[in-house]
Image (cartoon, rainbow, N blue to C red):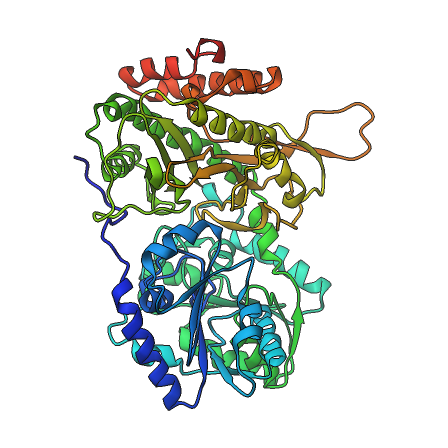
Length: 612
């Protein structure tokens, strides 16, 4: 029906291959005199989304989600995933080969303490674990009476015979009109922070930070326009970027060379060792940096200054150009999403659409903008019970027909040079029942509570998170994921340090962009999630306020399905917020859509009193 470019519907899971691959890995471990191995979903750069050559966890277990870890011992194995993936992991992983554990409630360290035999050697690749993570694992092994052993020649890779080649996506410059600050100014800010710690050099190990700092973008990782590269920033002199030369055109190479020395990735390890031998004080973030980097510096006599990466908060606080870009991207994307919503409302009640049809249509509407660079993550769509699977990914095998009387959840986003988008809408197909309307309205109340929040400067996401859950809690309900995550500027759709969740300890600062996405999932029936992106701004003045106050500006523009709302459950203030939001949506999007969609939009944005 529609052409699709940026995602596949092939079944990537290889559940049946899990047991024989596990047996092959155990044989390799035995040959090396090791009792076990930790296999994380990670690459050398600690990315959330990794290139195909780093999908070790998927190859071993069949699990295709973006967060997880497996531990293989000679007599048992387990895979750990968070609450988003508990349904998916049971579909994709052979339970006779791997026990399934909750990553948060029963983390790998606790499992190791319970299952590692005294004297056993548990191997790990120091490039695939952060320094902080490796320390936690080592402590768990010690508690169990065993030991954590670093292996630089990963036993896993000896078993993966058909491993894909590393990516060599072209590096491009991120235009100053979108970046808002040139690389030289960013380097000056970074060095000012380094000076506070008396650091001789800073290790930049996160590709998002490297890409932001040098105003470059790439295509090494699906849907995230980062360049897979490390960098070293000295206190004086040129920084060094470690990047595959095949990614650089002549012009890009010359322009980058004016700012930084360009060296092959293979030179990174000897240069780290040289830093250590020169006894330099090297600053790095142990929560982001591979353990191998720390080891190379310390074992060669260097001093490591541990602390948070100074680039992370700089990148998270968007400047005026990035904020203007975000608003433009959200309006453009909102028009594309609204065209999809109008199309869906016409077609879905006929009972012929499938989940894949919806994904293809939505991507097509985004591509029609002429400015879409990629989707920001594989689109999540779920009809009926599939919507209850938080990170469900439709395949040709699981593709479900969308039936009248169901709910349909669609979570999607786009990558544009001026901004990254992420939006979720839950849609009624035909007439919703009372339970659907009640559950949806409880979620909506939480969404509005976050959107309307006013909070002192320095408030963390953990402090705001209960606002989104309070109405569900009163009914004995909850959702097993965070309420919101940070979002990059033409970078990752998931960006630290801030998040709205039970674990969100970073203060929310003006200029940060986060998602607002509470949900509820009734297993076997439906899923509900309502997501907009919000910008932290200065709140309206409050008389006699004792502290500076912040608020959220909602950036995302697209109608929320009023047919799913039970108006009697909303307060007057909540209903007023929704009506005002829909006025904004209508005013902003009407000039950008076709006449048929504009007519639909008028009805979709009518005051709540006219919902029925």
